[in-house]
Image (cartoon, rainbow, N blue to C red; front, side, top):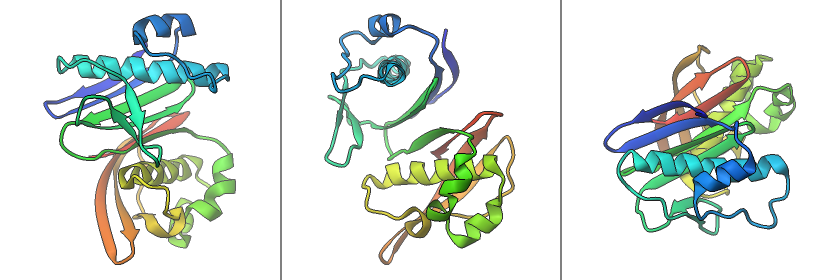
Length: 206
């Protein structure tokens, strides 16, 4: 069983999956889902199938069938034939998905890597860079949080360092972050949940 963690309530379902199966095995569990021809990298093909297996599993917990995914012009995913909100993320060998019956959701999962330091200048506000310093785990959490908020916003027209801001925080294995999505004169405040391991982090909105 590749399901590492899950949370299921009446209105929300979340899961974390570690890919341990072959493409054939995942294809059998994903049912009618096929991999687009343009996806050729072996790991990307596995991620494509694994996240659909995870979605199928989460919907099953509500007694709902999975009919597939579609995307809008901004690349935001939607469930076919269902009005639920959904967000996905993957960083091999992990995939994660969150589904909510009522509110827009965003989730992101990233491996903790040295490249976080290199991308920090274009990703973080000066106050966030000062707070994170060279702490790779903290930089990863900032990145995940901003990616999750971008998915909630639903459009790729924002600048990470200006429109997606996270309040300073003390890093722990698990905790909450306060984020702000700033678009023109409008500001939306969000509470985000995070979990951190030795190798990766993920964040989603509460």
